[in-house]
Length: 135
Image (cartoon, rainbow, N blue to C red; front, side, top):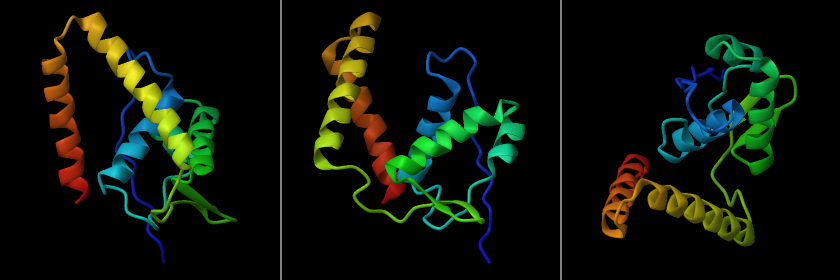
């Protein structure tokens, strides 16, 4: 019997990202860090919506995106589960998304007036934390 794991995420009202994007990013990070293991069942759309006090359609949108990207696997009549690790995106799509993420990061760093050395050191620290947790 599979156990449904609570999804300990929070929504920041001052965040510039949409609520569904915050859910997508939180689930991706939890899978990348190994906090959500393959085969773990996620809360239902209504359950997570109730937990976060948001519209169920917002959770459904986030879950649909995560499923389309291969992070989650829908099992007919059973719910959503964390998918087994595999090449979730094509090499071309990964490169495209990396370029977008780098552009967003650079734009934020420029707007904050940080030096490239400071920004790179912080990025390196953040990546080391994720890598350490997922190892």
